[in-house]
Amino acid sequence: MTPRGELPDIDRRAAGQAAVAARQARAFVKRAVRNRERTVIEVLDVGMSDRSSAEAGLTVRELLTSIRGFGPVRLERALTELRLSPKKRLGGLGASQRVRLREFLEAARSQRGPAAVRSSRLVVLAGPTAVGKGAVSSYIRDHVPDVQLSVSATTRSPRPGEVDGKHYYFVTDAEFDRMIEGGELLEWAVVHNSYRYGTPRPPLDAAVAAGRRVLLEIDLQGARAVRRVMPEAVLVFLLPPSWEELVRRLIGRGTEDASEQQLRLETAKVELAAQDEFDFRVVNNNVRQAAMEVVELMTA
Image (cartoon, rainbow, N blue to C red; front, side, top):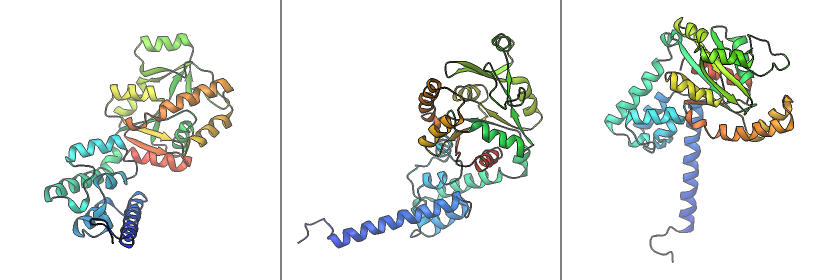
């Protein structure tokens, strides 16, 4: 006999299979939203109208994070604004909760219209060393002319192929000191315990005032500094497909000696741990795809 309160083995197996099938169905729905095959509004409506559906089983967290680029920081803000538990399932939302969530999603969608495209937006792109920030920003510069790239100043020497004024402003330590003293830098930092990098502020302010979309590619310290000075900036963290791929890219580019490579990899571990501080995360599997996701976030 089966002890009281326990399911027979055959029922336990059936329950387990049903749970797996439900998880797979929810994953399919989330993937469809992420790939833009379905809208979050459509999924929400189905979940609220049919409590037996896979959509109804989605939690609020699962629904929101299925939206491409919706990272932990943005999720936390949304949940606070909506006054919803992240574990609340769509099928169990109360009437007022349904209204709040739907209005929130509708407002987010309306902000992607022509008016949003015309509005100025400063996006900060950061990430660990060798993740491909330069390649992604270069693709945007070459293929999306209405996005202005902010050119950083640095005290390091140019790498092969880098052009002064296009990739960086290569300056002496004395000139960098003068820029700091003159208040010409939005932010600056010592990177990898060696060279200084900073963002010249006058051209950035002029671009924002003119209503242009501006992309700022900087390191983690710089991104934090920009957030303090310009909290309206959107912070995007560029991720590698895997740690192994990050190591391969760093070693493969051959621009640092072995000791500097090791230093940069140790720094990268710290930088990767800070990704939850950012509004959005983009995985750099493919430069073109990652670049287009970043551009899309400029009007999201």
